[in-house]
Amino acid sequence: GLSRAGLKDLIDNSIVKGYSGLYKLKENIIGEEIEALPGWGKKKAKNVLDSIEDSRNVSLERFIYAIGIPEVGIGTARSISGIYEGNYGELWSDVSDLVKSGSCEKRENLVGKLSKARGVGNSAANSFVSFFEDKENFFLVKDL
Image 1: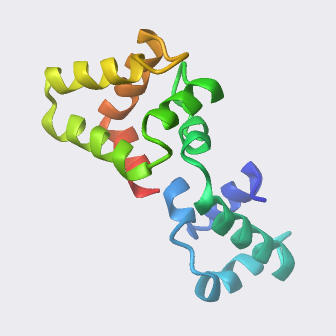
Image 2: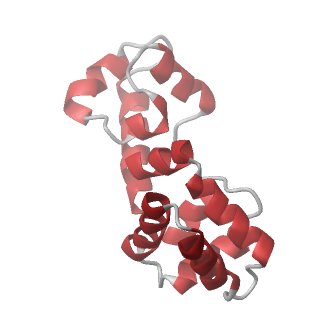
């Protein structure tokens, strides 16, 4: 896998720019650059690239949990994923509509929808929505 130190190496050497840059790495182009980093090598570079590729196929609940939304633990993430039946596209459609419109009504509707799920209280639903209303968070997740 990729440790924090490994990620720091990639960022410090301008191989990636932030988390979303990890998903833009191309094995055949970047692999040699990664291998050349001090303390790296062919095997470590391949393992990192493989683990990044594997992370593309994570369930919606694990993705929601992994992005670190305050008040959204694994149980809440599982419940939110359940609302959308694990469908990234449907969740992203609701989030995108909210952010693009900036509408208080859409916000209330989404908080209400999330709050109806088992184990998702009003506080966690508001935290989830607030997380995506922050444009920096929205675009960070969108770029993933």
